[in-house]
Image (cartoon, rainbow over all chains, first blue to last red; front, side):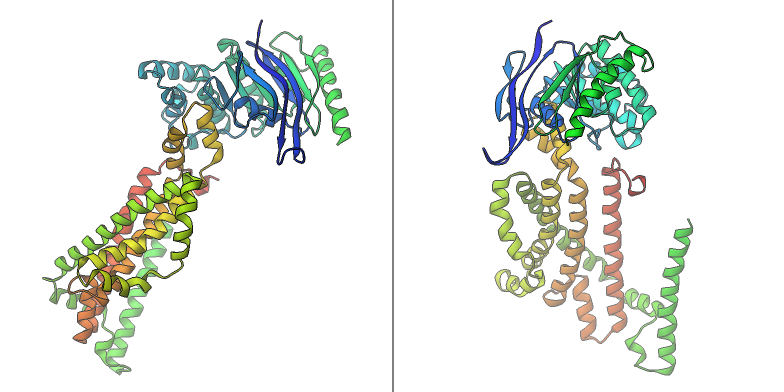
Length: 253
Length: 254
């Protein structure tokens, strides 16, 4: 597998040069095509900032960030973003929300409709296609947000703590849903979380970040077969490795 | 349902209080009876001038609509410009911030000098007054459009233009509508003031004319007529707003 996203010595500083705050310091990371990578770290460690860089909302202060060899120079339809809050357009129906991406990218109408139908089917919300976001539950909204981000057929799905605002059962359900969607679309996923269980449950590799400034502390591969069971000794063992790496960071805060 | 009953009762009580006060005054004559007409006397006075009412209402509404239309177009347009471009904001906003605190009626005599006693001065006065509130609300709505939604639109491949028309503007619609509603109220307010001061037709003029004739009952009728028309206009705008903004989560839902 060849890497699709390459972060090479990436850094991000806020404020005036030299005297500003360093949010991210020399992150180097390759994400392979079709891979599911989660990033965990103490809050304020810059993991969301890293996602903003990949999404193109914020330019890098140093280093290079490329997607399939092209430098990332701004937001684009080759990367779909799912935010912590669903960020659905409240005046557009579920269907119109999902169709927004293809529409602004001038995808022909018939193709847009076909994509939207497929995605509605994929997230199991065909019945709600004409509902307004306000009529959906939190979990349903987040499923629509995932479908909307996938409608452009992006190379990567960038997810910024997408399930953090949901209750435990809904979160567990959506984690399974996301794995199912990932397996059927084979989209590369970069997933930010502060949940250790979540990171181990989902990822091929877990990236553990250090606290201020954000650096990569270690990358832990998760060799467990899916579907994973949190109660197996193997899971508990890997989970412990992640939490040990993270806890030594928290003690330094 | 229960709320509606209480509201109706409140209105009826108000009407009864006015009526009994006027009736008591008529019998004991604290002030001359003509000074405080009863509701039926007020309606009777209106019936007397029933031939004049449709033309008055028509000309007044025409003034309001013309002025309001100018204000709405300019207010929304300039509000969108200032709200979406820092450059336009720096040019437009300071001038309007200086003019805004001046009560618009202070300009009425100036407008009369400039544009005469004809239709132009009244229409422009209404437009001028209603403009500010529409501008400010549009500007705020567009300027502070949810940045998360803008990011979402950009991440989906929308251009700046598409993000503005597809996301910024629609997300500002509730504020724009608030501006339009306040603008209509302001337009009405200024209409009556302008007609009292400088007109020979319209609902405000009819009140002034009744004053010269010392017909308090007709003055009451004129005021009630303006209130009724204003209420209907407001209700219409509310109706359109509810239709257009049906996507908005209601306050109870939060």
